[in-house]
Amino acid sequence: MKWNYRILLLAALFGGVGLGLIGLGITGCSGINRGAGERTSAGKMEKEVSETRVTVKPVNVVMSLKPHHQGAGLSCEDCHGSGTPQAIRADACLSCHCTSEGIAQSTEALKPNPHDSLHYGPDLDCDLCHHEHTRSENYCNNCHEFDLQVP
Image 1: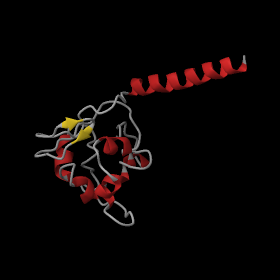
Image 2 (image 1 turned 30 degrees about the vertical axis):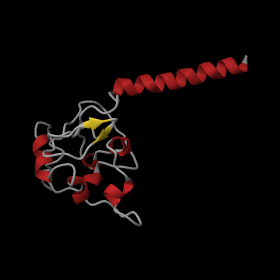
Image 3 (image 1 turned 180 degrees about the vertical axis):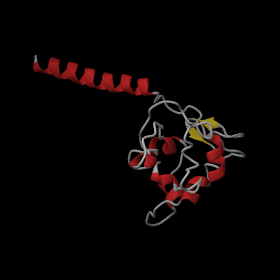
Image 4 (image 1 turned 90 degrees about the vertical axis):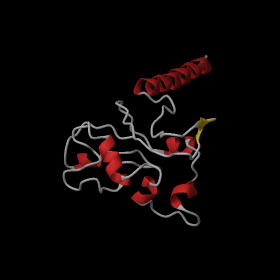
């Protein structure tokens, strides 16, 4: 009898988590950061990008970027380089994700524009908000209260 309750509890727990993820819009790769000439094959993005665009999804998704990058077929070395992993610089992010100015332009409809700070312009380091190994966060909310979703 105890096993039946445990099975029901596990089913409810995992089913609830699954429904919660669907409700948040986490449904797998949906075309974010795909550019012209880029193809998807077996869940991996082939590196044939001639133009990159950034799409901000209007859902409240706060998670690390690791699943997105793994789905794109990137390895640790693609960002950190070979040898002992080093901290990531913004230029490593921008080697795939356009330029700071291009990203700011692609999110100009958001108010405030998270990629064109009134304080710093488009020159903030990407990893102040976007994290690979921990949950992403809204850096601006250290001082402000902006309702922006950070992938």
